[in-house]
Amino acid sequence: MTTLFLVATPIGNLEDISPRALETLRAVSLIAAEDTRTAKQLLTYFEIHTPVTSFFEYSKTNKLERILDALERGDVAVVSEAGMPGINDPGYELVREAIARGHRVSPIPGPSAVLTALVASGLPAHAFYYAGFLPREPQARRRFLRDLVDERDTLVVFETPHRLRDALEDLENIFGAARRICVARELTKKFEEFQRGTIRQVRAYFQTVEPRGEFTLVIGGQKSTVKRPTSSEDDAWDDVRVKREFNRLIAQGMPRTDAVKRIAKQSGRERRAVYELTQRGGR
Image (cartoon, rainbow, N blue to C red):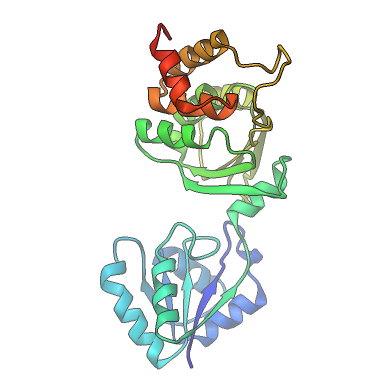
C-alpha cells in the first residue's frame, strides 16, 4: 500500500522544518506542490532532488488523476505554499480521493500560521474559529463579518496587505472599536511583527504605516452571553431598545433581515415580533 504524505513546510524560517519532513521529502517518488517555485527553493536549500509537480486550485482538475496515478506506483508528498497542506489549497480533494482508493494518508505536522499567530496574540486560545481568507469584494466581506460578529470564540482570518486597511475599517464598523485584535505580520521571518490592542488602535497604526507582507488577524470573540429578558432594567429589551438597536445596525449597513435576526437572538424575543415592531416606525 502506498502512502500520501501531507507535509507541513515553513511559513517563513526554513529552519522550522522537521527532520521527519525532510526525510519524507527525500524518500517519496513525487512531490505535489501548491507553488513549485517555493517548493524548489526549500528543496534546493536542503539538497533534496525529488521530482516536483504543480498542484494548485486552478490545476486540480487536470492534475488530480495524474497525481493519483503516481500514487499507484509509489509514495507521494503534498506541500502547500507554506504551512500545513489541505488548508486553503486543493489538498482536501486529493486526500478524499486517495482514501476512497484505499491509499494510506499520513500527516507530517509542523508550522502553521493559524496556530503561530493565535498562541502569540494574547487572546484566548482554548477554542477558536478559523475562517480562512476574508472575501475580496467589500460587500461580500461585510456580509461575511456580520455572520461572525456574535462568534464567542477567538476568530482567526487571513488578509492581504492591499486590503488590510479596508478590512480593519469594516471590522471596526461591524465588531466595534473596542473589540480586541492582534494583527500578525511576516510570521517567523526577519520582520515579524505583532500589533495588539483594540481594533481602533490597530487600525490607527496601519493608517500611518504601509501594510507590507503576509497578515494573520486574530480577533477576540464576543464575550457577552445572550440572555432572555429579565426584570432588571439594564437587561430588559423593551420596545425602545429594540428600535434603537435596529436603527444602529441599519445605519452600519446591515440588511434588515440580518438586523432582525441578530436582535431576536440577543433579546430573546420572537423574530416575527421584532420584525413587526421595527416595521412600525422602526426608523
